[in-house]
Image (cartoon, rainbow, N blue to C red; front, side, top):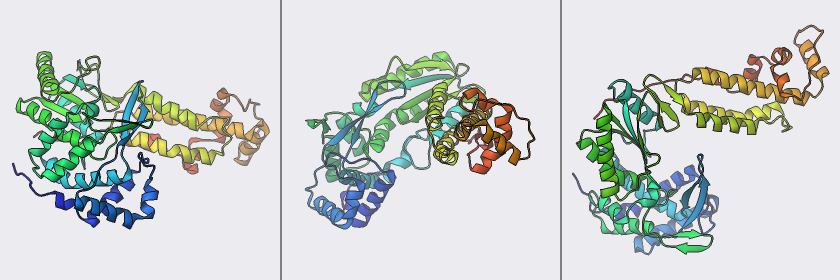
Length: 423
């Protein structure tokens, strides 16, 4: 396998640093410990990039500590993120631009996280293919505890050195790893881990875990991995148990990671394999109930009857959520769920409009304008049950919402499947 000796010079290119800045800007993100935002950096872009270029050329560049941010998890607990400064994110992106073409082509074909041209959909479909076409229905679902925080620095450098022997570049990467973290104004050193939130961390994690991927493939185990979400797909329960022990030996023994024993388990696809927001079953894929609940809670927040916003504004704010949810979960066999959700959303919007009309007389006037003849029943415009009344449906039919621009979940093509050849 080819090794690369002189790569640091590729960082000493102003055009490359500018391209790195554009990628960092596209990803957005908050300011680091220096308080400098992306817009602040861009105001003096040429001067700032020139200063970075000079520091890298003279090898005086020193990464700053990352800012610790705590993000609540859906299932409880917190996820620790590290936010580097803008200038550090730019240098990290420049390093990624150099290293990614070297490492990515040789990654395991069933590794999908943080790779160009690969997505959660590809990972879900690959797992589905193994289960349904190759009858690998006993699945080891492995969960790693705080994967990014547990990466061993020496093993990271060792893994990179297998392809890259440029001492200056390796030294710079180690500086990022050891730059420390600032927590409420207090500095703490980092002896292990690569901060989740750093631009370079996803590539480092893939390089690190590729040793696991390749060893599992050498033992003829079929895996699908998206970052630290790992599935091992087997034909029998005994094979799954053996695969679990093999994976445990590699992950905890060689890679010094920690398997979450409570969440890691062996399941049959008849029960459903939870993976990346869906449940993959032997014959179909469905949305995980907790994801549906979280989506409906977000819809409720945007469609409160006492919000006082015009209906068009509510629809405008709602549409990005509907598009994002549907485009992700179109991978599932969810046509009935999408239809039910679309009806429920329209009912919530009808309830908003009834509340905005305030009085039944305005509803009746609207119906007359649309060629409905009285007499009309009196309804309470403020209660939820009224949104299901025939009068509300006559006044606000499904087509009316389409004309207002509401994104219709019922029109989404679902269950799209890609085909793969296992390599």
